[in-house]
Length: 234
Image (cartoon, rainbow, N blue to C red; front, side, top):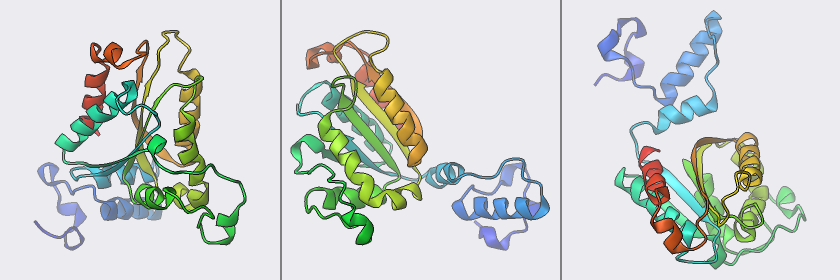
């Protein structure tokens, strides 16, 4: 196949459209700006989506449950099965079983090029997140939000917040809870939407599994299949 840089863009016909690589999208954006013909500027999400098309992604999964075989652990396993079948590489960190201290808000990181004063499991987790194409949050619902174990990991992203805000990623969230009220997921979804806006992440989908207090409750539902299907779609 000819190198995209060596081909006159005017010679492409419908059956030979150029691949939407990062380089090509940036070239399109630059040309559109030069000629004033851009009806919508290409966003980082556009470039990310095209860049990931047709290639395996590195996915970092963060779980928050203290139960290794709980309801959310099943969703995590199913998502990984679906994503792995598509050739993606999933790196999973179970926060409840890692040594991670809470953020101290000391801002040592701001004075030391993003280095945290604490030396714990975040030293291995943060580099993986910073080089990932996608992040997946998995948690049971504790008092209408994610578990403290998972929240600690997100709090510790503070040290690399500048780098993360320049590194758009795809994202997904899998949540389980025992109750079946129609508002029980409102708070965690509001939090997730703020994270999408701030970091920025590009949501692929969420799986919200209600009325599944213990493992046997969720095994007889469609939620595990939903999580596997989501993994296969990303």
